[in-house]
Length: 114
Length: 114
Image 1 (cartoon, rainbow over the protein chains, first blue to last red):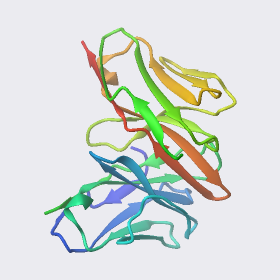
Image 2 (cartoon, rainbow over the protein chains, first blue to last red; image 1 turned 135 degrees about the horizontal axis):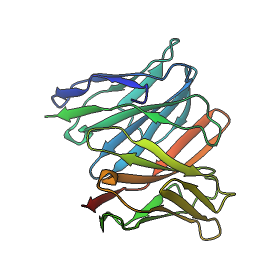
Image 3 (cartoon, each protein chain N blue to C red; image 1 turned 180 degrees about the horizontal axis):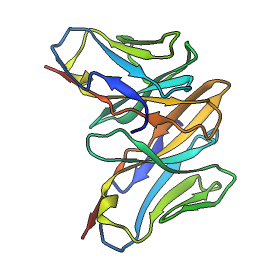
């Protein structure tokens, strides 16, 4: 158990809908990262927040957005869902952002878009 | 330039054998190179990591070899065990200030036969 929690574990929804994925980082970790894992794209970095502020952005679609709240938990919002958004979404956290700061991954949320 | 290329895609090894997974990168700004292990239904977990100023790091049966001039690094699993059967991802980390992101290789599915 990494100490990172994600809810829900599974999510099934329809095209065009909007969903929110939630992540609670390890106690004391200020940085939260979101990743998407799909069969064709592998593990892709989406976005990083540090102490409430967006710090790095990867291959995140404009239909997706995220935020980190004062209690450091984070939410990833996915809207206008398409079939291709079906994937595993992982949250990770780290105490800092220096080189060598280990990222601890949560168990993931499996999103299925029908 | 952000890409990390990983090979092979899959690997089958007999128990007790050596498993070798290779990765290559282009971006010389990467400053940390972790390997992650992922079991089905779980999030990736850090296995071992190396900085670019070190040519080799060993932890138990796991060794990273790093060749900075060739921009290549590899994971060696000695005395491979059936419990090592998992998907392995190399990654490369880059950051500035409080921003940091991981770029993952495409993954290697390792099967260790009993």
